[in-house]
Amino acid sequence: MAEEISRRTLALGLGTLGAGVLLPGVARAQDPQTYSEDEVLAAAQRVFGTGAEGLATVVRHVFEDLGRPNAYIEGDEGSGAFGVGLRYGSGNLRMKGGVTVTHLYWQGPSVGFDTGGNASRVFTLVYNLRHTDDIFHRFGGVDGSAYFIGGVGVNYQRRNNVTLAPMRAGVGFRLGANIGYLHYTRRRRLNPF
Image 1 (cartoon, rainbow, N blue to C red):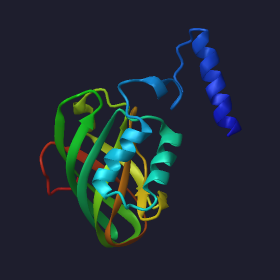
Image 2 (spheres, helix red, strand yellow):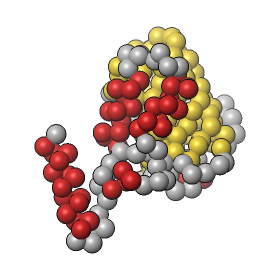
Image 3 (spheres, rainbow, N blue to C red):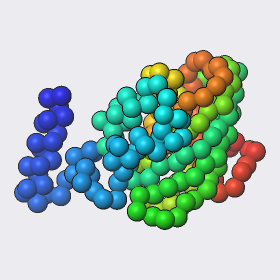
Image 4 (tube, rainbow, N blue to C red):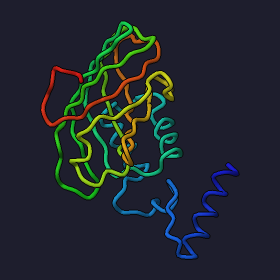
């Protein structure tokens, strides 16, 4: 808490001096091109259902870590692993302030101490996405180190300045930890690489 207050004080002080420094979750709080926590929670509840246990806590955690997103993806995916894993999904990207919805797919391999399979609904918060074309790349991340509460898990994926925070809830059983990436594409691909 003290660290957060210090960051906010520093950001306000530097902003007053005209330094133009933006710290996560501070100056963006009033940005009309980002989603508020209430908007995100309402959209996530449409994806997962209003009874998704722990959803508000997971959303709050991501907002505390990363601030306000400027886009989100809602979709479905399936995955399976036995040491080496595969994940496939599809969904729609929605950017704040835009009327366009971009349909996309994702696929990717993973390797680790991981076994099982699952089908999930996915709601991904997207940070610092300037153009929809910037999503069509590989984003690395670690699963298993995810923040998890009440059936909803989240991990972070990064590429350059763009950060993704996919939240997943679904059916199946997958246990362990892995490292891998997801490749976001315009067309469905069977090749996960």
